[in-house]
Image (cartoon, one colour):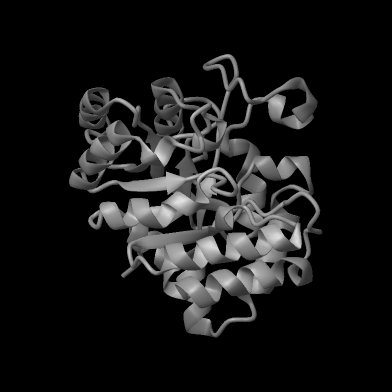
Length: 290
């Protein structure tokens, strides 16, 4: 079984997505689940988790409408892949607003977690140190939702472990291996931060989003970062994510999948099963076949 724990959808006529600038070419287009349907089927993906791409309630509502097949562009009911989870947005810097927002999110069983685009927030380097954020994270934990953290390096990687320790009932998901850098000195510092985060047992990491500046997108080039994460977290706390349509800036979904499959293929069958599906199913409380 394969669960893609990290896929996006967006339509810039629905909401702003102001980070999608003209230089990002193909990302300017509308991206619905249907546009990735053939690739998902070719790769044998059984389930998908949609992850927010804008800090807005509108984006979260759009994901849920797509997941529930309420809009054109949703996956056909006959398609072998199902969308079984959504990681939406919450206004984490405002505890009262977060509480109210979560009440709405929890009405939908597909909502599994929340995320904020911290790396694009002007307070990125301080965000996980803000008291209102921690008050909101208490509410996220009480609601039984996870916290996804995008692109942690270099913005807030050093604060991930402290955040996880402060909220022992909160599962903290580190997206994209925290974005390992290409500079050797920076890479060593990234590895230290990742290992420190892994010491907190409620952290997990995504093998996703690894089209990195200065690092070729090959299994050999990515293996050192993969092995650091694997040693630190173990396969039971690592999950696969395809990161479509961000992959369209490089080589698209299938070639991205194949490189990650080569890395995961170096594991035992039991370990690979954890990375392909077990960790994601447990983290996001997704259905597994009997």
